[in-house]
Image (cartoon, rainbow, N blue to C red; front, side, top):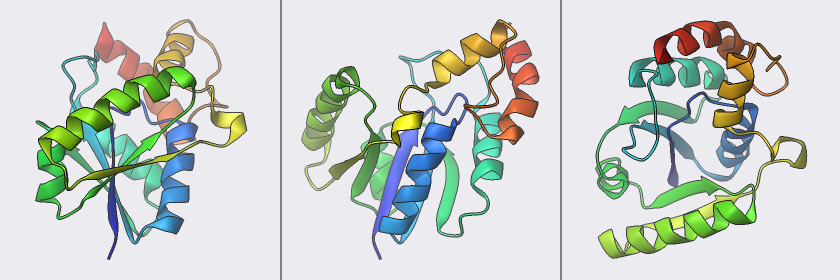
Length: 161
């Protein structure tokens, strides 16, 4: 059974993320959406809330599991008996950052491989940061996130204050 781990902060999960999970679920037997905390990203929204939202949005996909994690991604991947990491690429800037991560992860654990998927063209410009900014300014985010996330967004923004 091929298991892939799709890590991120998912703050919040967007339609771009969901697109990648859906496509990965057709390629791999088991997809683990691993929602983590990052010292490099501000995630004032609790890990539990981010896991709940992603779980609710992805609940219709039977071979997808959502869980939270802390610590090194390579340690988490091994703890789940996996050896594949899934990452999404939207732009050249994403590639440069992801290339660095691949190199570091190979040093930490050479048995783990990284695979990349590109989101559908109409979703490639979506980022969680932009979604939060648009929502915080009162803009309509319905094109970018699942209705479950849209409903929760006002409370998520309140948590950031």
